[in-house]
Image (tube, rainbow, N blue to C red; front, side):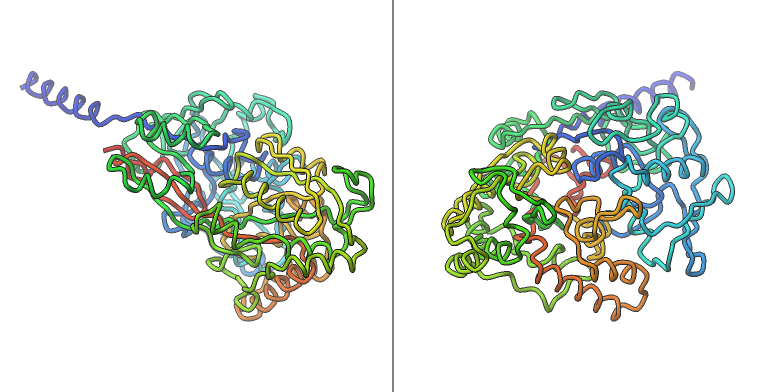
Length: 520
């Protein structure tokens, strides 16, 4: 009998071993850091959602569901109470409690963090007991749980023991290269720019839906190299698939193309507060982008339809606002984009005092957004047609964000995906006057400022009447359009390629979640 049981056990182990799989995937952008509070960008947050967890998370259909909090409820109109999951351990074996949530809040809301704006509505955080914590808000905030879906919890003891009590945005500390989360996968190896390895966490509190025993991520900047790696079977997934290769890959029997529309709006940004140009032949001259007529001339000069038809091969959709039509709070009455009109652009430039145009510096990433450098090259050519000479400087995103934070640009390319899937989100991050104390405008690199937009934001955040709230969002969107605070161009397409044996879930936030991957 014992021998029979042993044989059955061995068969079970062999069966499990046969199902064990290594999954390899590639993307053009390497996560800048393993610190969940240091860089508020999709490559970082999307990757780290596999390693760290928050109080809440988004499901396959983007709905908010419990993670480290089992439930939550409003405390009247004063805030939200989160009832924490018990029995959770970090990858290092430490027990999860409310103290870790408090520590993570203090860390993520500090001036050293890139996530501070998430907590602008918070007035106070109070530990009720070991597994209950209250987030008090300055005003009623019906969307607060949605707004912290990417707020990830770190172990307070681990951070203190390793000197990582605060994040390092543009430098390094222990949390830059190491991680200790509670999620389904743990960090096994980190070689920035080369390879990052994740392994399943056997002590995870959740139910695994994957059959991965090892997950290897490799950044591949060259799109042709990425496609070749997918076709040869060297990787099981690439993100993104180059637009020009979509049709060809769809005809291959051993790969699949998964395509949709992302939540991300690609736009141009301006140095609203800069006194002088920093680049080009006119370096040191007064900043022409302070004049709304010049900003509108740029919008009229850029042929977005041509970019969509040629560079994006018809896969992207035009954008008129900082959010796409799929987002809550989109202003339907403001859906029209500025018309492409080079002659009108020249007239506006002449009216603003630049009949012969001017020269400036355009900063652009070359490994962050789909065809980002090609888009910037096209924009450079289009602006030249109306007398504006752009000196293009394209660089890896690892170098790009520090350049923007140091105001080393005259105009720049930016993509924005609202973490809350609500139009309030980009107003808070991109349009409010930068205010570190209030944790607002943290990605408003150009220091755009409008008193009415600033006044409307807290009203939008606290309004529970949908009709009144939409009216305020409409007013904000109209101001941003009239002022040409940014030039929204298009909603980025979402195109992934996988082997035919891979099953996964593609979400419109472009977050790749390993716990939903099956290798057949």
